[in-house]
Length: 312
Ligand code: F6R
Image (cartoon, rainbow, N blue to C red; front, side, top):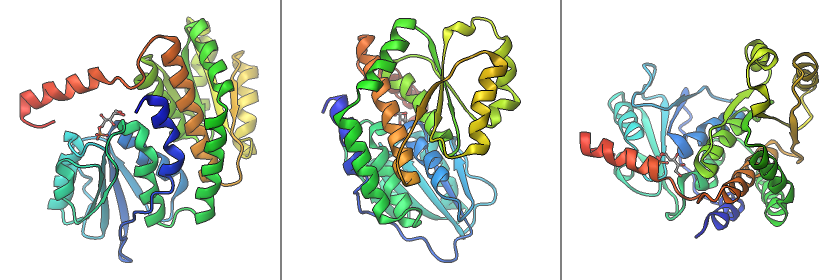
């Protein structure tokens, strides 16, 4: 499957029906994962806040983990050493464990597992990894998946604007800086990682209102300011935060390329925002003559780690 075909599967991934059991006694949730699997937890927390959710992106498990914790390890390959190690620690602490994976070591470690289809890049399997979380915690309603499906289909059918943005970035050779208004903070980070892995360029992300307490100083005063391509990711609904975009532009003199996502439900808008970024970064890869599928450097790094420690 080439990369654009992988992208087109995202909408179908939202129809994935597998769930796991969340005991009524659950007091808190931990989601562990790295890279394209780690982004799943970040996006989940934009859509769910009924229980406290703690994210792990290293080898450990937090001190508070107990038998009242649902500990979800997400790794597409099932072999990422940070996630495997963190799950091992959670098992030692007596957590109720779940693995979301297509195979590998994680499969046989946890109490429950959701096995997802193989054959994709981890970052292209976002829907397969996110949907079981949303469904198991009842975070969104069934009709929202259908709306998201329809919205993603429309983007699949027409991504001309995304191609144009990729072209602007390509011609200008600017470094993308993506700021997300809630609930698009995780999506802004997803765009950053997709620029890294698909387009093979550095990018930077942040969120509003937080950047008004730090980045804003640099936006006004930094050197080489013209070398950055500023993007504001928003849906125009959060007036309290929205007004900050214009004021930030006025004070600092920078201009944001606003990406305004449409859609009734938060799930549909968040997934549409993800997909817009997927296509921009795909088109930029093509313009740069890079293979968006290639993650050779990440693989080499994992191989070298394996050689040195016997794990992956
Ligand atoms: C590759 C990718 C990477 C991986 C990461 C963790 O497409 O997106 O960021 O997701 O190296 O590997 P997994 O997902 O197998 O745990």
